[in-house]
Amino acid sequence: MSRRSPRLLTLLMGATLALGPAAAATEAQQQRARAAGVAPGVLQPGPHNAITDVRGVRVGQSTLIVGDSIRTGVTAILPHPGNLFLDRVPAAIYVGNGFGKLLGSTQVAELGELETPILLTCTLCVWKAADALVAYLLAQPGMEDVRSINPVVGETNDGYVLNAIRQRPISRDNVVAAIKAASGGPVAEGSVGAGTGTVAFGWKGGIGTSSRLTGPVDSRWTVGVLVQTNFGGDLHIMGVPVGRALHRNGVTGGQNSQGPKGSIMIVVATDAPLSDRNLRRAAARAIIGLGRTGSVADNGSGDYVIAFSTHPDVRRRSGETRRSVAELGNDAMSGIFQAVVDATEEAIYNSLFMATTVSSRHGTVQALPVDAVLDILRQHGALR
Image 1 (cartoon, rainbow, N blue to C red):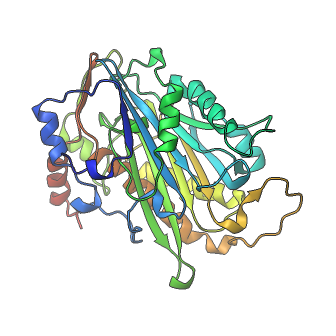
Image 2 (image 1 turned 180 degrees about the vertical axis):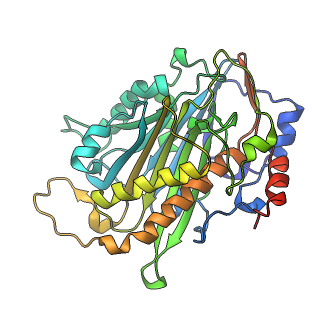
C-alpha cells in the first residue's frame, strides 16, 4: 500500500490501471517536496501544508480510469461546509493567459463572489461537470426557488497523451462523488482527480497543494493553494534548471506533442478578511510562483487563478441590501502576497513529486525521477 492510501479522498470508478514494475518503484519512493528538502520561501506552512489548512475549506476528488483509454477525473474545492449559494464568499479571478474554458468567470468578475463549489476537470468535460453541479445544488434544501446559479468550473486538457478526451467521460456520478468526498485534512496529490491524466514539463503532473502562515501571532492568517498542473516550459526547482539537467522527458507515445502548451488551474484560499479587489491582487501574485517553476504562459496555455476568502465577516448573505465589513487594508497585504507566491511554487512541486507513472493505449507519462532531481539540487546546494 502506498503512503497516499491512508489519506486518499478519491473514489475510483471503472477499471484500475495496472502499473508496471517501474511505476511501482516510483510510487514507493514518493514524498512531498518539503520532505525531500525542497522548501521555497521563508514563511512556514500550516499543519497539513495544504489548502485545507484554511479553516472550513474541504477538497474531494473522483478519479475516472476506464479500460485503456480514459484517465481523468474531478477535483472539488468547497470554501466552507454550508450552502454557498445562501452564504457566499468574496472571490476574484486573475487570468495569466486566457486560452481556456473557465466557466462562470464573468459573473465572479462582475459581482466579486462565489456561490458554488469550484470544480476542476478536463477541457471537454467542463459543461457536463457544470450541469451536474447545478443539478446537485438545486436539489439541496433551501434551493427550491432558485432560478439562476453560476457554477465555476475550471479545466486543463489531459487529451494530449493519456485521456480519450473526445469521449467526454465525466458523468453526474463523478461530480457528486467528488463533492460528497470533500473533507479537511491532508489532500491526495499527483495522479488523482482532475490531475489523473495531466502532463507537466514533460513529466506526470497532477494535483498539488501547499499553505503558508503569515502575519503576527495575534493576527495570523493562513493562505492555501491547490493546483492542477498540465503545462510546459523550462522546469526550474528552487531556481535550478532541472529540466535541462535531466536531458530527457518522461513522455512516450501520444498523438500530439504537448510541448509548452497545456494549462494550469490555481485555487487560492485564505481566512484573511479580504475584499474581492484585494483577492484579485493576491491572485495575481500566484503567477509569480508559477513563473518560478519555469512556465512562460505559452500561447496555448490557459493560466487561471481563482482566489476566495472564508472569513465569516466578509461573506455575502442572500438578501443583504447593505453591508459594513472590516477587511484588511492595502498596507497589510504584502505578507499575503508572499504567502501566495511561495505556496503556489511549492504546490506545483508537490504535483510533480507525488505523481505516479500513468499509461494508456496512446502512450506513457513517467513520474518525475525524484532521486535524479534531488541529486541535481544537491549539487547546486538548493536543498534545505
